[in-house]
Image (tube, rainbow, N blue to C red; front, side, top):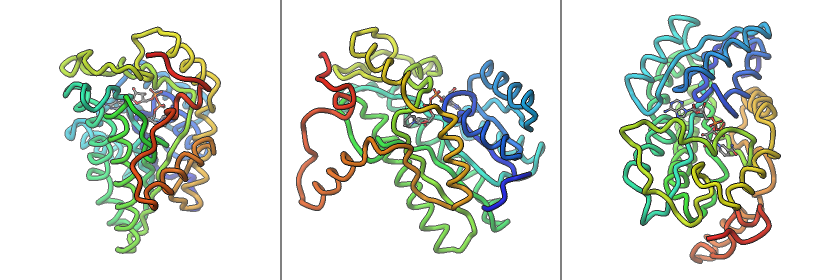
Length: 297
Ligand SMILES: NC(=O)c1ccc[n+]([C@@H]2O[C@H](COP(=O)([O-])OP(=O)(O)OC[C@H]3O[C@@H](n4cnc5c(N)ncnc54)[C@H](O)[C@@H]3O)[C@@H](O)[C@H]2O)c1
């Protein structure tokens, strides 16, 4: 999609972090932006700020894990601006816990937002894009859609799912010559509010059984390790840079978008291991390596 000016973009999880970065970059590219999020105060603040900067945006409250809510988002977009040209499936939460111990509620919450959210929005928005013969879908996966780390099973599974969905969608759109492009965004570390994801966990899915000794993504245990992880995130990439990268990827119709090279060698090692027929390598986790030492138990 070469010219973005005047086009309509929908960004889920657009009120914070990477989603907000995308919404702001789209508005700066003269797109009309539908900012969708479950958390209302930052949602309205984001849209207010985009408008104050001369951009065009509306706020839609949406829970991506709910099909009726995503259908309502599509209808709100169509009513306000017409059909979406760009869909960014970005809303996400950090579901933590080992595979043997994460609670069913944690699995349901994390997969509901991170994976079902993408499935719902693809189903809601893609038919109109295919019918019009143009559009672009950006799915926010993660480097953790290519690499596994102990203690964050639900998150890992959700992000591998988003990678698989994105690859499949790309192949389908190409095979059917639909004119719809796909970008699979795989951020490394970006300075956002992801460590405080629990703020958006619905009450019906609350519980604390998903703890693990490598509980690096929780926000309720102010341990030394967690403090180090928080510090690391503070100095991570600015989400506005990711927004600009996404704009470039859409214009260039680029499939893979990795935000930094920190994880390249880990991913290459995994691919070499698969080719050699070996089991996943044990050793220091990705987070341990980034922190430069072993995590406390
Ligand atoms: N920050 C990183 O280092 C990093 C790395 C890799 C991938 N990601 C991915 O980037 C995406 C954005 O996360 P972020 O880091 O900007 O975190 P963030 O917490 O700053 O933003 C996530 C947004 O999603 C919204 N959200 C949560 N549940 C929702 C729901 N049910 N429906 C609609 N919106 C909902 C939140 O309110 C928030 O505005 C996520 O998919 C995350 O997994 C982040």
